[in-house]
Image 1 (cartoon, rainbow, N blue to C red):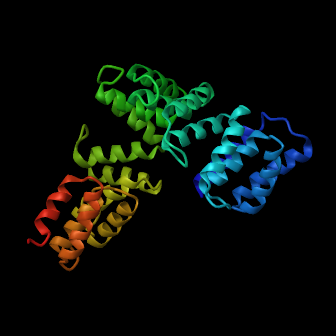
Image 2: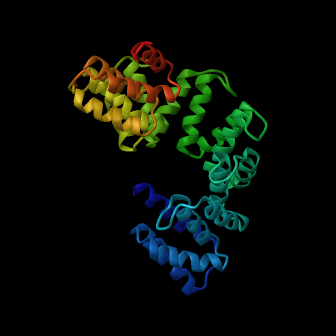
Length: 320
C-alpha cells in the first residue's frame, strides 16, 4: 500500500511536463486520486481514456496497472504494450520499467540488449535506470562487461543521493571492483544507504553486528537494523530476526516466534530458512520431533540449491 502510494505520488510530478487541456488535466488528477484510494475501476477508466489519446503519463499508469494486476488481471503483454507507447513518447519511468521487463523476461523472452537500450535512454534523467544500466555492465548482460562503467554510473547516482546506487557503490568498494578495495568506505556507504531506508543496507548492517563482521558483535544493534529491514518486508531480515529469537540474542529467546519468522522467510523464497525449519523438527526445538516434517523442509531448501540440505536428506531418507 505504502509503496503503491509512493509510485502514484511520483506520477503526479511525471505528468506535469505534458500539456493537457483543463478537462483532460482534471481527468488525469482524478485517475491519480482514485489510484491512491485503491479505486482502481475509476483510475483505469480515467487513465485509459487519456492513454488512447496518446497521453504518456496515463499510458504509463495503465501499464503499471496491467503490470502489477491492480484493478485488472495481470497482463504482461498489455503492460509492455502501454510502457512501449509511453516510452516512445519520452516518459522516463516507462523506459526504465520496459527495460526491466526485458531484463526479467516478464511475459517475453529475456533480452538484455533491449533492456540495456531502454535503460540507456532513461539513464540521463533517472538514477534508477542508471543503477540498472550499471548492473548490466557489472555482469556483462547485453552490454560490455565493465566494472569501471558500473562504478561510474553507481557513483553518479550516489552523488545524487540515490539509495540503491549508494549501496551498490559500497559493494564495489568492498569487492574491489572498479576501484581499489576499501572496506571502510564500503561500510560508510552502507550506513548512508541504511539511513536512507534502503532495506538491503539495513539488513547488511544488522548482519555485520550479528556476526561481528567489521563491527564488534552487538546483538542489540543487530536487532535494531534487522527490524528496520523487516518493517520494509525485506525477506532476509525475517531470517536474521528468527536467528536472534532462536538463540536469545538481543531479544528474549522465543522458539515459537523464531519458527514463525522462518516460515515467513521461507514463504518469500529464502533458501536457508526451510533448512532451519527442518532442523527444528529434526531436533524437536520447541516442537515435537517430526522426521517427516524435517525431511519435507530440507527438501524445500535443497530445491533452492542449499547444499547442506541435500546432506540432511541423504541422512534422513529411509535406506533401501
